[in-house]
Amino acid sequence: MKRNKKIYISGPITGVPGAISAAHFARAEQDLRELGFCNIINPRFMFEGTGLGYNDIMKHCLDLVCSADAVILLPGWKHSRGAQMELGAAYALRLPVYEYDAGWSRDHIEA
View 1 (cartoon, rainbow, N blue to C red):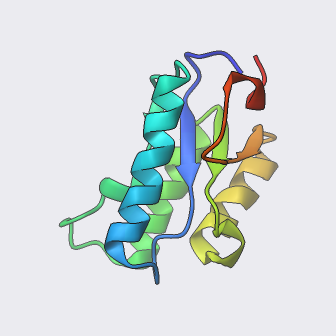
View 2: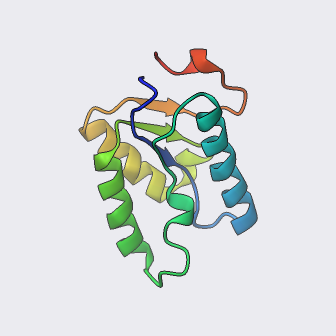
């Protein structure tokens, strides 16, 4: 994956304590930036304070997945209805999908 590609971070938010969810998304974004990626879509912080409900947020998130070049799945994604929807959209669009691991190196993502 080229470093200028747009990467969407997907993972559990609803039902996960706010500080834990925030830390997981922030860590993944930081790791991706350290690997040289700069165009990262992190939905975790985009909709705070907007007053939007779950369905409206997911509509926006699915639009964001459609604008991405790849999707990164955070741990716990299998138990997240939203992440499952995002994964479905990624598969439908034939986007590359990677499972995040905090021990990543450049070798974990295709060049």
